[in-house]
Length: 609
Image (cartoon, rainbow, N blue to C red):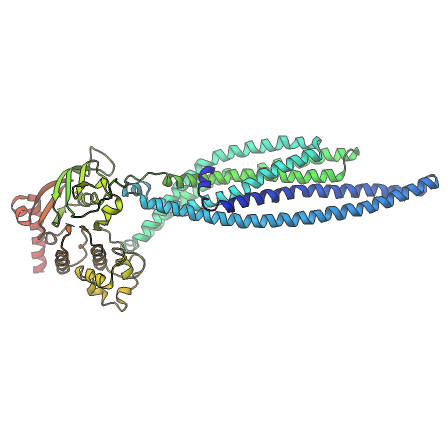
């Protein structure tokens, strides 16, 4: 886990190393402070003893020479005391100031390294997700990926900062303080050999117990975030069906699940406080008993006991800090594992060996079968054999769930086939690089997605170098210029997040214009005119006919949208039921006839009304 954390510090190693060095220097200076204080206290005790001897001199029958010698020694002792206090006092002030400076610098460089780590991890996650196929995203789920890029990265950042600062500070403090304790008073230092391992064993046991709860808790976080994302995405539907109360209860249940698992984890963690306090105070009591006895017998100076108490605090605080680090790392371990689950996931779709580009736009399906779950017994598409010539316009029709979208998703390799092969320009799509293949294919998906920014910003997704004239022409073909020109700001109209200030039909026309700007060899319209009226639909089809040298595939529910196509494919339960022109299918395909007559009947009835 530590190796995984350190990988995220690439480019910020200097700040990380400086943090570690400064922390070690800060710790070393802190450890010598009790020794300086011990020397001052021992000198004061020695001076007090000599002063008491001088005060009682008149009651002793000593010779003049002996009295003179005692007074002389007392004066010398006083001078020495002043020197000792000044010397060690100055050393304490200097050491404290330098230690404080090192600590401040360590905090500064630690923050720099932590911010860099967070940036690297988020960038790595985001870039990795960009490499994922639809299958990868489906498996991990969008809500989970969002949580990993936000909450999990924050936890990992805290662990990394703790790793380069506290993880080095606590053990070094423990080691340095223990060494000084044995140097200062080895007869008392053995107490630490009992307290430290005991505390470490207890904390390690608790840390092991708490990890599964945190791992489960983060899964509940994913579910909670999924609820939020789903609700906000479909907020209009929620309002339309007056399902506010239901959604509130659903979210409350999700947060309650998080709370329960968090409580179970925290209920174990809180045991650390009483356990560590018991060990710490027990150690101090043992030191006072042993030290007090030694002082009473005159075998130990009070300054030595004071130093041992200070070292006791440093040692046990270090152990507590180490235990806290262990718990924090355990808490973050689940986050780090989840982050690296993404980073170590291999995309199911990767670049092919060829640098070829799509030139003509011909498409061939050879005995293609496909399943989202790789279930051979229940394929989404089965034994698809189809040839689409370059420049042809092809319509696809079928019922819901018959595999229309799944079929066209195989062309730009959003998914890979389970069996058979898909050829574009006579070459297997797996041989193309993803960039070259998808650069030759424009696709307008069922769900029309626009981004924050102006209309022009969104259109430039199709071709970032497009001129204003090219943009206007593409919008004319897509019948989008009609409503764009009605806006006060025209192409500079801000769409807001997701294009909230345009209608569904307007979104579709903008997405079609964006696809046209790409100037692809293959254009796929996946039910992309469902929200426009039949007249506008006819205008869009007429505009697309003016784009020569492009293979067009149109998925539609309305036969009128595909009637003029060169060929029409009828799908039924993942299989090709028939292929032909509109006239041929009206004569030979029962499914096509049924759809046609039902739509004609609806049109007539609608006209009568």
